[in-house]
Structures are given as C-alpha cells and as structure tokens.
Amino acid sequence: MARIDQLEREKLGARQQQLYDEIMRTRPRGKLSGPFSVWIHRPDIAEPANAMANCFRVAPKLDKRLIELIVLLVCRDASAQYAWSAHFNLAREAGLSGETIEAIRARRRPEFGRDDERIVYGLVTELLASKKVSPATFGRAEAALGRDGIIEAVTCAGFYTMIGFVLNTFEIPPQPGGDILT
Image (tube, rainbow, N blue to C red; front, side, top):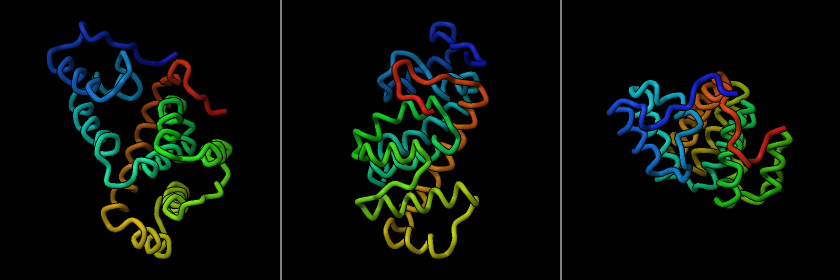
C-alpha cells in the first residue's frame, strides 16, 4: 500500500491538471502512476522531472537499449519494484537480451555480446558502488560513448536513483501484472 493517496485528475488544481495531461501524453497508462503520483503534489518538482524523464524516454542520444540497461541496473541496485515492473518489458523491446535482464535481476554480471553494453555496465556499476568512476572506466566510456554519451549515461543513472528513492520512500507498488524483483 502506497504511503500517498492516488489523486484523481478532476480533483487537481488547474496547474496540476495541465501537468497531469502533459505527463500522460507520452505514457500509455490510464492513470498517473509511479514517481509522478508523488511529484504531482509538487508541480515545481513534477514539471522539470517530466522534462528530464523525457530526455531519456522520448529523445535520448544513446541507444534506448543502453538507456534501459542503465535503468534496470539502478532499479536493481535500489530494489525499486515499480520502476523494475515498468521497465522490464521496455528493456526487452529496446533489445536487451533476456539473459542480460535475468543476470541483472540476480545481481550477476551479464555475459555481454555487445561492447557498448559491457562499457555502460562497467560505468554504471562502478558509479553505483563508489559514487565515482576511475580514469580507466571514464576513458573506456568516453572512447565508446563520447562526451555527450557519458553525460547522458551518468545523468540517467542519477535521475533513476532519485526515482528509486521516491518510489521506495512512498512505497509505490509495482505495476499491476508487471514483472517483480525478488
């Protein structure tokens, strides 16, 4: 049971309704959910959070497969049930293999067939573990992803870390019928 009540659109103020509609415009769900069910209470947070989310969801510079790899790594690290349930199928659709997804679930290093996935995995797992990256890891990531790719990857990891904090603090449950972390 979530620690925050689900708000109905009709009971929101004018600015909140406008944000609700903007947030839902790019999401196929029937109601506002996940971290936005919390952030809608604070429009000054919901609005820039939606813009940031759309940087990764709608028009990323990195391949969506790599974005979803980052998201799953952060979700697993935080045991963020809602985000895992929301991104499990998105990761498959973006091209991550079932073996990679299951290894992340089990907190094992996947056997990557693609160098870019291996490099992103190394960057993100090192960042999650130590809150920084070594010169060697940075060099490999820069050679593979470029400066803008590293910026996007690290920012995505940080953004989804924040999402995990919100989801876990407010005990937002997984999506109905979504994949569950064990």
